[in-house]
Each structure stands twice: as structure tokens, then as C-alpha cells.
Amino acid sequence: MANNCKENYNITESKRLTTEQQLNNLVYIVDTLMSCGLPNMTINIACGIAGNISGESSFNPKAENPSGAYGLCQWMNKRKENLIKFCKENGLDYTEREGQTKFLIHELRNGYKPVYNHVINLNDDIDDIAYTFCMEFEVPGKKYCIQRPGYARECASKYNATKTTV
Image (cartoon, rainbow, N blue to C red; front, side):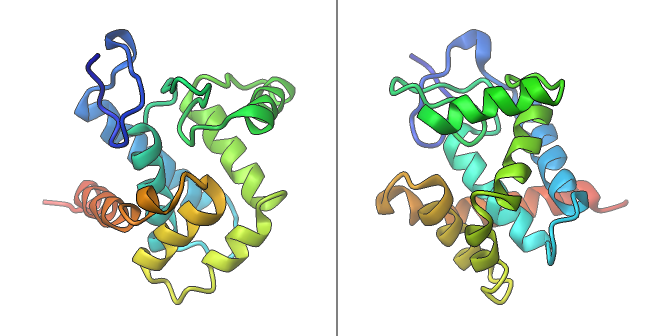
């Protein structure tokens, strides 16, 4: 089965995103994180988080894997249930980037606030941010987390290129 996720999640052809759609979702997520009011948010923190989303789902809010993980951050079990509940309570669609990005921010303000507090104290080092976010928020295992800093730098480069005026 063809897929576009960096870490080999199943994406059916009907759910695959084009490169342009992935870039649009990257920009949306980083812009939303930068403007959401989380304290001490920087472009490196936002891109460190985005690098994890890239590794988890290639920015595809409909990405699923065989274990039942779903969405941009590959939420599963109770966290997936919480995503669906949060979106329903807030009039959002849990299958779309807006609902999932707002839920991500909700998690960072609430149950995963210690992770966010740890990340903001890493001297704005994008590699440390991406790795730490992976180990403490995504938790897929070290073999995946060691790849996340590269994804974060790639996201920063792509994001910055969209903000450059000619």
C-alpha cells in the first residue's frame, strides 16, 4: 500500500495529501501555534512540534495506523477519545486540522503542560525541542524520536521559505 507518512503509517490513496496540502497544513499548524497564546512560544518550538507531526502523520489529519492511532499526532486510546469529545464539545470536526490543532493546544495547556514547560526551557534549540517533544508527548520510542530533529529543521526551512517575500 502506498503511503506518504515518514514512519510508515497506512494511508489509503483516497486519504493521501499532495505536497502542497502538506505544506499548507504545516503553515497552518505553525501559524496557529505561534498565535495561540501559549507562553514563550517561538518559531523553533512551533517547528519542533511540527516536525513531530510530520513524522507522525505527514501533516495528514486523516492518517491512521493499524493500532488505531489517528490524526496529526496519531492519538490513540483515551487520547483519541478525548480528541473526539473535545471537538464535539467545541463544534469542531475531529477529522480536520483545525479541530486537531486546537486539541493539541488544549493538551499543551492542560494534561501535557509539564511537557510544554520542559520544551520552553531548552534554550530554543530546535533539535532538543523536537526530540524532547517526541519522547514526552508523542512517545513512539527512541528509534523514532532520534529522527525528529531532522524533521523539525526541514519544517522550519519549508515554513520560513513560505514567509520570504520576493
